[in-house]
Amino acid sequence: MDLKINFKETKVPEYNLPDPLICLDGTKVTDKNQWFQKRRREIFDLFEHHIYGKMPGKSEKMSFEIRSINKNALKGIATRKEISVIIEKNQSEAKLDILIYLPNFQPKPIANFIFLNFYGNHSIHQDPNIMLSKQWIPKKIGYGIFKHRATEKSRGMNSSKCPVEFIIDRGYALSTIYSGDIDPDFDDGFQNGAHPLFYKKGQTKPAPDEWGSIGAWAWGLSRAMDYFETDKDIDNNRVVVMGHSRLGKAALWAGAADPRFAIVISNESGCGGAALFRRKFGETISHINYQFPHWFCENFKKYNDKEYELPIDQHMIISLIAPRPVYIGSAEKDLWSDPRGEFLSAKHADPVYKMMGTEGLKAVEMPEINQPILSTIGYHIREGEHDILKYDWERYLDFADYHFSNNP
Ligand code: GTR
Image (tube, rainbow, N blue to C red; front, side, top):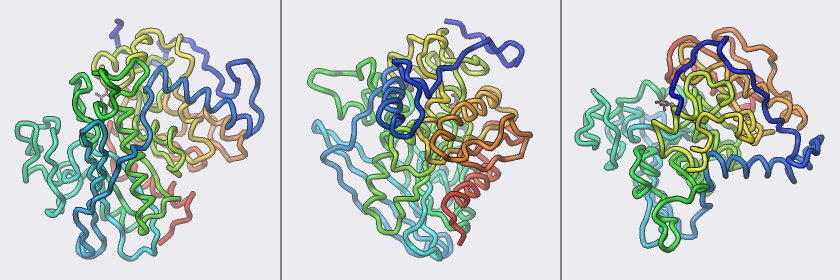
């Protein structure tokens, strides 16, 4: 396995990308019908089989439990709801806790952002009334995490990534689930999290073409969507799925798989997210499978050092979202995520968006730093490091306003 790292544009290998508009039998796709009836399915199957693995659908036994409602949260500007989605199967259950803030001044039903978080729902805001997660949580110095569990000190530790009041002021609801409720982010051979619920008799781990952790996170996002469809306060035609980094990879896959998400946003999702594999710039397939063997399906390991053998590349995951709006956010110093490779994915998805009659991506060249592109495909590269900042949220809210005309 080659674990060398390239950060030089001059060392990017020459490559040819598979054409999203040419079917496996060589037919050229020229209209929407052909796309939806044939080519989209082909591409989706390839992603499922080679990269993310098949996910189960909605479970027959699923219920929603209201854990708390407070109409006077955040000094009265919001209503806070906590809902558990309970999924039962194979005599076990998975419980996903959704934390929702809804702006009180905004007419209902309200457009809603959903994202997964890294350290528990209580980590996104200091609000002392958010339930403290009881799940396994990754270690992080200064986050008040003791033996992989949250403590009172963990509240609001990740709030810099999520300006809740700002989002509420902009007239959007905000919903989040701890990714570890769906699948804790470590390699335990898929014994915890949602996977075992769906094992067939005698099965002890996912088959080579079945879901890893990213697939499970994406599946969890769709279960949140199942809940939103039952909540009259939320406009389920205006749900935005977004995610940062590994959870941005999950947001893209969720958006590709589930057309109920009206807008899809990837913040610095990099390798296995928005970046093109074939550039081998920053993180590569070998690096990611080596460090995170549980993220993708087992079949994906065949492509370590063999990106050119993959029948797809990541411009095609963006094409699966078409004609729905999609936004790719990059950061200048986040070379590990390959900002140029993220832009090029957006650019090479553009022909699919244009074929559908949308404006596609209104840029041919990569824009300058802090010069966002607002079109059906949105893109920015901002100054700074790998992170999700208020700057990024501002762009995503502007993008949602642009497509939803949601001005409070
Ligand atoms: C890194 C990983 C990236 C990205 C990042 C994150 O270690 O190599 O693919 O997912 O973690 O999630 O912050």
